[in-house]
Structure formats: structure tokens, C-alpha cells
Amino acid sequence: MLYRKYFKGALDVLIAFVACTILLPVFIAIGILLFIANSGNPFFLQARPGKNNRIFKVIKYKTMNDKRDTKGELLPDEQRLTVIGSFVRKTSLDEIPQLINVLKGDMSLIGPRPLLVDYLNLYSETQGRRHEVKPGITGWAQVNGRNAISWNQKFELDVWYVDHVSFLLDVKIVMMTFIKVFKSEGITQKGHVSTERFRGEANA
Image (tube, rainbow, N blue to C red; front, side, top):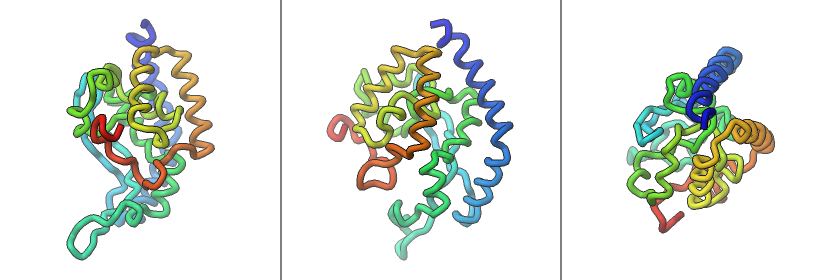
């Protein structure tokens, strides 16, 4: 409880600051490559709910361009995913800019992933408990299947984390995250370039 209430946030900011300083050359290099690949903005900003459902803008690298068909509609995800974007996503480098969200206090290094605002009204009471803590860059659900598991499984793992937050658990998640990234496990759902939308209990 002391860790969760007093030390977790301070540790987040300290580690995020050090990481940003060390990774600055990587930040710049990826930004330039994606600017070229996307023919424009290398960053993706989107409103997401944080702790206690407070809305903030999550920052990620933009891995898909904005190419459209003759009717002006965006092309399917698999046609807009660039080569460099695919690499950035596969290696989870697209998550790096969220260190800025951690420094701003919107996110934690470890916690349930911040999902779409649209999902707020679709959660059951238990599923909604995932917002009792700050969302994280990585989390218990990410190291236990990530996008390869069902929505119900993700939410069960998220709520389990909320009830068991500890320093040792966070260290374990960080170590497991490095292993998962190295193995490129659970990046996408089978048959999908991006994660299928949550539509409530019916497709959980």
C-alpha cells in the first residue's frame, strides 16, 4: 500500500526522465523515419481515459499513414501500415513517446493499458475497476498474452493487477516485458493488423 500510494509515482517520473534522456537519439531517429514514411506527422495523439476515468491525450508513434481510396475513405489498416511502422510496432518502439505521458503524470510505467474512451460505457462494474490506477506503458495483461488473448481475459488480468500492485510485481512485469518484446509475442490478434474493437460483453 505504501508503494502504491507514495513511491510508485515518484519512481515512475524518475525512471521516465532517465529513459527519455538516454533514448533521446532513438526518439529523434524514429521520428525522422516515420515522418518520411508517413509523409507527415510521426506522432499519434488520441484521447484516452486514465485513473478515475480522467481523459488525457496519449502519445504514440504513428505506424500507419493516412492514404485514402478514391472515395476519400481510409484504406484498410494492413494497406496503411508502413515498413518502418511495422518494425516500430513489432519491437514496441511505438510506445516510447508515452514516457512523456508518464512525466506529465497521466500514466504510470506499469498498469492497465489506456484504451478508447468509447469503451467506458461498455465495461461491467468489475471491468471498470481497471481505472482505479493509472494506465501503464506495459502491464500484467501485456505480459500474459497482450493482443493474443480475449478482452475478458485482459480485463480480468487488469483488475487482478489493481488488487495486487506491489514493487516486486512491477519489477516482474518489467522483466517479462523485455522477454515478450524480444520474442515479439502477442503483438496482434490472429487475422488482424490492429486490435479488434471491444463491443461489450458480446465480443469479450
